[in-house]
Structure formats: C-alpha cells, structure tokens
Image (tube, rainbow, N blue to C red; front, top):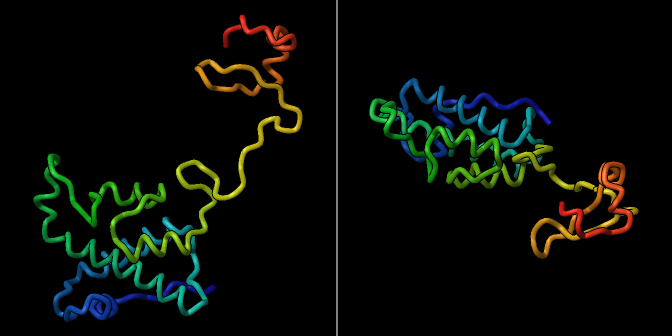
Length: 173
C-alpha cells in the first residue's frame, strides 16, 4: 500500500471528458471532499498497490468529485433549508451518512469501489463477517413473547427466574 496520489483538476477533466478549463478553483475542494468520503467509506488510509484496484479507487474519487463539483453552482438554492442538494439519488447531506452506513450513494464508480475495496470492521453497527454467539453451546429455550418466536434463556433468566428451570409457561416473558 502507498500514499494517496495528489489528484488535480486535470485528472478530473481526464475522467469526465470535459476540458480542464471547465473546472474552477472549486475542483480542488471537490476532489478533497471526494477523497475524504472514499477514505471514510472504505476505511482505507493507503492507496492500493494492485493496478486494477488503484484504477477503481481513482475512478471512485473522480466520479464523486465530479458529482460534488457539478452540484456546486446550485449552492445558493440548495442552502435554502427547504431544499436539499442531490448527488446521484441521494441528497448531499445524506451522502456522508450513506457512505458511513455502507448504503449506495448513487455514484456508480464510488459505490463499486466502496463495495470492492471496503475494509471497515463495522457497517451500520453490524460487524463484517463473523457473528454473535449467545449460549449456543448449552442453550435453553422457551416460547417467546410473540407467536412463533423462541427465546434463548440467559444466565440472568436462570438466576432471577428459577421457574425457567421447570419450563413454566406462566412466567410470561
């Protein structure tokens, strides 16, 4: 892994196919914002060594930077508290939340890269891989509170409610 490259408005122009002259000084800020969103979305601080993955990461950052840049002329309207800025199918305020939650942003290359390059341990509070064990090795079960539910009894259930030991359905919780 290496350091992130220093992207320029020329890189953004090369990606988008528009002339570099079409990008104002705001392009640097859009690139910086897109890179930050990429780092947050993938939990990576270093650039991929693999050329294919590096190309994917660059396209992701450029696609998001272009989406952010193209929304910039509408900032006066979007600053109105009754409207929201859109990038892809999400509003700008939702983009950072979507990225942090692992929800697609609607910016295709960005979403593909986050999916393929993401190394976050937790997405939306759920660990990636693995699971949660809950007394599977010697579990005791009873009927749950709702029809069709089963309840795993914890040590606290046994310590506090000794009636579980004789499986008394009248306990009611």
